[in-house]
Amino acid sequence: MYIFLAIDVDNELSEIKNRAKLIDESIGFENSCFTLPLHISLKASFKIDDSIFNNVIEEVIHYYLSIQPFKIDIYKLEMYDNIIWIRCHRNKDLDKVHDDLNSILLENYNIRLHEYDLNYKYHTTLFMDDNIDNIKGAYNLINKIELPQSILANRFIIGVSETGELGSYTIYKRVKRK
Image 1 (cartoon, helix red, strand yellow):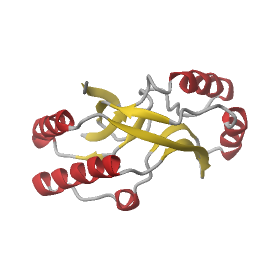
Image 2: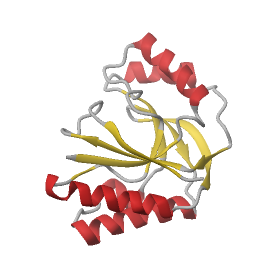
Image 3: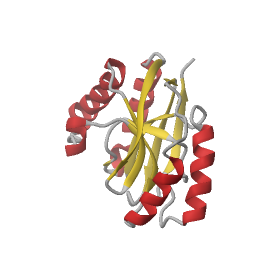
Image 4: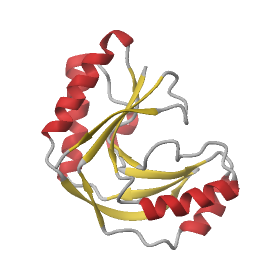
């Protein structure tokens, strides 16, 4: 089983999501990024053995419930290789959550760091496609959209997939903090 851990920002970015979905439909991307709520990934997705699935999920939920809501400042919309994403500024709260999750998973379940976790770039993916012309076209259509200055991290999600393939993840659990 594959797991991803994230902050749910779908409500905060709903206007951008609606605009991006229209662009996605008009261009016809091979894999839509809108099968899940918009989210800020907290670490690279990872594979676990089914025998520890429930323990990992319960521990992550327990950790999510310990987090106090915090603010995330938006950096910019950018095209990075074959991806268009909304980059977020690093801050001590994001780094702490990222580092804590990596520590919990490594120490308790021997889940090693992915190379992306070593210099993690916090982001919300809008488009991803192997066709660079599609990516450039989408960027030209969305790059002038106004982004919020900041968003609140108070809703967290756990997603799962049997295969780990793009588009195969579903939301397994949502955790909301007040």
